[in-house]
Length: 298
Image (cartoon, rainbow, N blue to C red; front, side, top):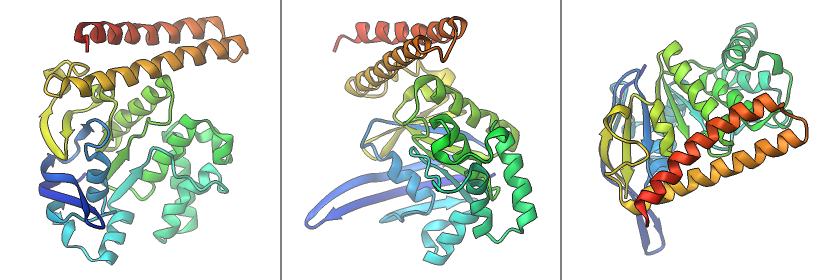
């Protein structure tokens, strides 16, 4: 497990004479072993923050202290070692090597780290079993569904047993039901493995699975709460327009999920019981969102 402390972090992107402030005096404290969700609208600085914590980029000012060490002082070589040993990354677009099997993809980070063949093969098999894919070890990414590819990506992130897992919009390319399964998997792994997990997302409904939620806007953390402290889909501390945008995106995703379920039923991919069970869950959330949108009346 690793704690993460950000102190007055500033990150500015420049293009010629133009500059864009991605993070502005941002401060954040994530405890050891915590499951933290950082939620905010597009352009709020979520991915920038994750890249800085992960050592992919460096801030223009401020400190980022991970497991007691200020990683902003690291040399490039030290940052590479940090990324290989301390951090596991999970991205929106899976980032699997297309010509390798699921097993070989999970082995790859251990090969880079110099793990013996027998040791890495054993661990890769254990991790695939942990994410529910022991039967797909010889499948290449294009032979797996989106949810299965993301499960492999999570196993890859865990390969070198890092204390910190960072996930950038891990459900962004998945349908509603698969996305919920992936978030629940993160939650289960958090409990089993005692990892510190930070997920950034624009999907506020994911936050219900977190220990705490940090709300990000205009490059700053404006509030940190627990799921029990507030109606997460209301998020009254956020501007009304941002809440409206988030709810509309969720509604569109749910409507697409309903269309997909109906198509799968027509093609015989799922039976009537599966259709009714999954449709009922989606419809319930859709009704709740439509109710909230009606009350907001933007």
